[in-house]
Image (cartoon, rainbow, N blue to C red; front, top):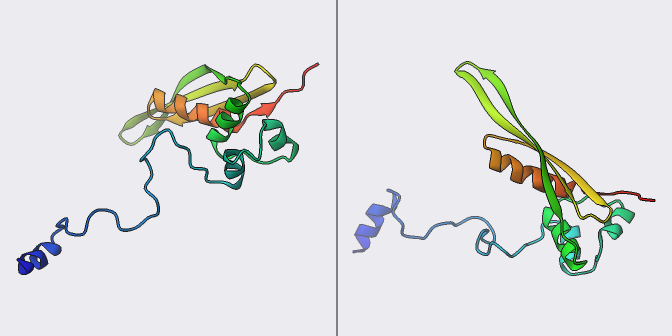
Amino acid sequence: ERGQDKKDEGRGGFKRGFGGRGGPRRGDDKDAWTPLTKLGRLVKAKKIKSLEEIYYHALPIKEAPIVDALLEAQQKKLSDEVMKIVSVQKQTKAGQRTRFKAVVAVGDLDGHVGLGVKLAKEVQVAIKGALVDAKLNLIPVRRG
């Protein structure tokens, strides 16, 4: 039996499990957000409670869930609108390659607005990417 294990070892046998490298597994829990930046950790630990604190210190927002968490803590809802979808084509040897460019605007109807642009092979992917980009580009609007 031991000789059989040795024989299968070099042929891609599943003797030692999958994986091997890499840290914690991603994708186990879809709802849970694990912050990747220092700002994200501060927001998740509730040390930063509003977007104004981030703007005051001119910190760059690198993760979209930061915006979601802060607006959720203030009981504000982020509304989004797809402004434009354009098909762009690139000429290649084999013909044209069509991709879709999506422009999305987001805002909380309380002085914060963001604009995101994304190019992708499929419309839905472009819209989702533009939504994330818009959250990252959220800025305060002076009123009055």
